[in-house]
Length: 461
Image 1: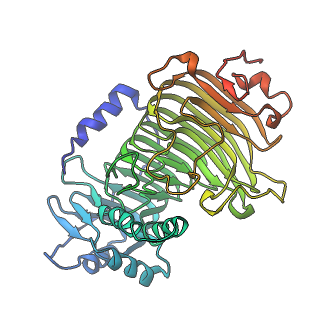
Image 2: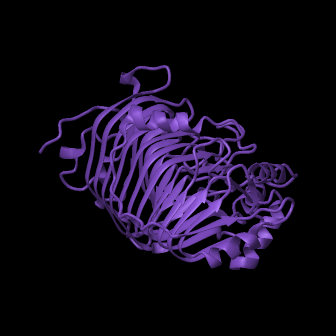
Image 3: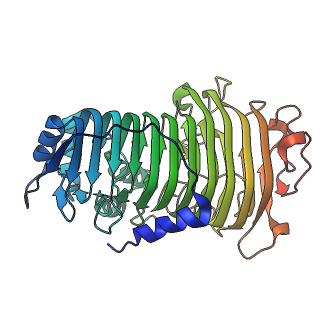
């Protein structure tokens, strides 16, 4: 693996400017515990023995230069005042069916985490050296196997179903971090099978994070790294400050229950699906998300820059969300909102018989600059129509608003300077139905809501 990790993070810190973030200090652990390793043997029992014995007031160290065989799912629970030093590397098995069987045996489901961390005052600390701070999922085998299964001689819809079944239905996420007061720093998430880290705790600071889920081509389904989110955040009082990643889904996704979240100073490359809220409101769920800030990001090759999605017929409220200072390079759609999300692989958009939607309020998009990708989708397009198809989309849209009538209030876009690929700013368009705007919304929107050219408009205070 060729990484200049410290150089990448130095770029993020100095060129973009990381601000100080204060998190309650973890008391100094007193007991020092070193995790042993045995070649060609599953290290998981030995790792679990250390975490059971040293779960309070301890520093647990994975040794530098050692590649541990983390060949079984692990629950590191009941930790109090523990510092985990990952100076070496943790490797999952490379055998797909082995991973699936072990996750099912541990959790009763195949979508659970490989590493589950719970406790209070917990610091997970990686290392800036090229071979340290690594969690390696060996996801390439999963991505490649999914495509091979789709090459059998079956009708198109069956092909899609088999594809999704193999590469999506039975994949563990890498880490859950359900901690009350803690930090995650200097980690490298390499070839994660699917989602990287899910944060469901409170008062957590993440710094100097790296994701490598790049595989195949951005615009081909062959070997595409589906659902390789960087972070899924459902906790409260969470700060992610310093991120560099190449992946095939959201860099940061905000989930139901998230509140007071800041994600700043990052780079999203390869075919990221952006800085996202949702999806919310699935099966009519009452979802609540509030006080979210994304700022100072470079989006390179992404399908979306800023994105919100809630399911048709959802409920709840997403409020006080800001995306600002985004630099866009080859981004398909810089700003995207849908309150009418549905599974296009299962047929046309269903009728909203409930007549409800997850309401959105006080959304701000500020200081977007750059240019669009000539393709409005990527290798995740395996259904017909594509999962992200919108009528009229043609890779010239800076903004797409797919709103549910009267349920989106106080939306504002300011200083949006983006252009289509190899075209001028006058060629930039938007998709927005003015009939769906709440009363008076056009006055503060910042652009003319229409299916047509992007026209900036004065914001009435």
